Length: 392
Image 1: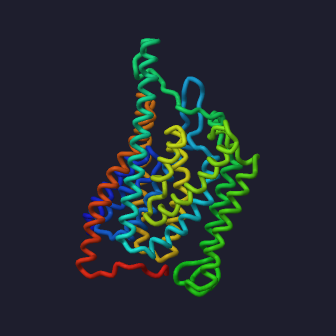
Image 2: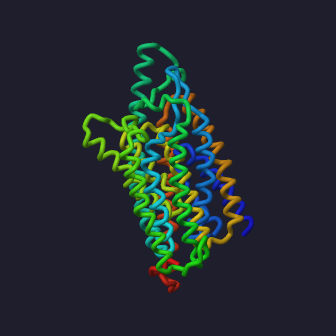
Image 3: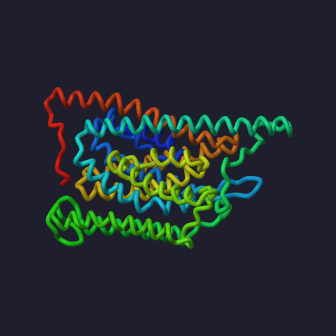
């Protein structure tokens, strides 16, 4: 068993290195590795994955807050804090819902949903990567024809510049609001306590008080999102949304909370952090790959930490081993991110980020579908209970 854990740790290090460039955490690879190599069941692998995604996202956030894209025209931050502000309340609400569903849903349903979700995301991401590559190739071709430069000396600009990204300082007010939102949801979860009713206050496990405190997160997410949308001093959506039509701008703003809610639910159920859904959707609405990766990793940090805490409150075991795997993924993500950033600077192709995401998703789809189907068949033939369970 110890040898299997060591091998799993090495493979997770490699998976974190590959996944880090796209800011997606790597949960889609961590879970198959833990299932196949370490022999974990799906739910234990999901809880471990939440800690591992947290470790990788910490490395990404540190790099993206410190590193800035340098170019001939200046530099910009790699995190869009406006998108994070619009998304965080709903993604944290989704995490709570997803963690509860992870306990309730049978493994066969989780496997089917995960496979369908990854297949859809893989298709969207690969199509976006091909589109970005064609545009970058056209820019390189024109530059070679006009200036006769070597390809490695040509800098391909972001496909969509935004005015706020030129700021080289961290917007501390927005960061403070993000932390305030995260702390608000954390306090509710601590007040609610674990599945045994042990929290800040004593209450019946899964009793009326337990579910009242849990349901308070719904109006809390709505209030925070409405406040951010209505406060022009906090949010300046023109930085990342085309303002050609006012109605279109409002619709696009509302899309981010809906996307975040779904990503949070899936992240809580699967222990993946939600980046695999956020990344392709941000690319689809026109956010540049580098900004997408930085923003995704920033949002995944908040969702994965909340998911890890909730798994602990729901009685997760083997915390020590999960923490070791989190440290391994932190190191792997740090190395992978630096290598990919160097490759982008050398070749001027930010589409490498999109293809990195697509590769992780494709591998995850094949592994989850194949081995998940095998596990479900074994459970069926052995007569194991395959129905829904109580939430606590």
